[in-house]
Length: 224
Image 1 (cartoon, rainbow, N blue to C red):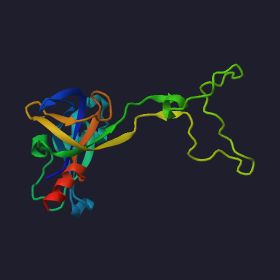
Image 2: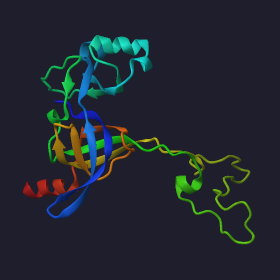
Image 3: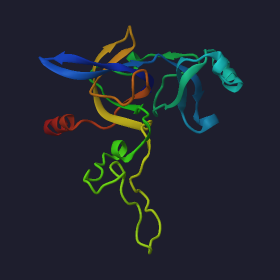
Image 4: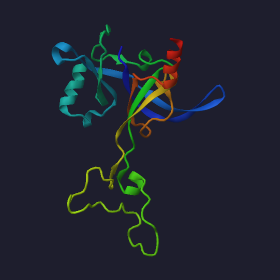
């Protein structure tokens, strides 16, 4: 079976387990619709193209409109390819719906891929956490500057990697080894322990983690 699905972040809440308050993020995962099935013969690899979220036909290009019509589905907002693991015997068809209950279970260790909040163009204070110059009597108009970016004449250029103002946020970030606390199949909701990048209603990818937490790994070694 496939190991990842598309979804969106709804917000955060608190789950009580054995008297402890555990922070959790509420995710709405799927249902994802299969748009195209790729295989070794035609494409060179096995994968599914899936879509999530409704999109206005008015905002859809003619090429994509024909692509959706060929699959027999309405236009989708979020489209992504999901690799089909080797040895999967299940057959997929365009227009088929995949729910998260077919992929994930309570207690699974997952990775969440999201996009951080976009902060626009920011200075060095907010972007890099710099503290600025001393606010003494001899300092003028230089309180929030990043300092010198120049070098000696021998180099004569600004070195790569110098921390300067620029675009902040809206980056793809992966939170690894999170635990699924609760599942609500009727509402397509998944509660994941901890925080997840992005704002409310931001898109994300939920996938089964390849890595395992240190605690689980240590328990397996001791059992062996």
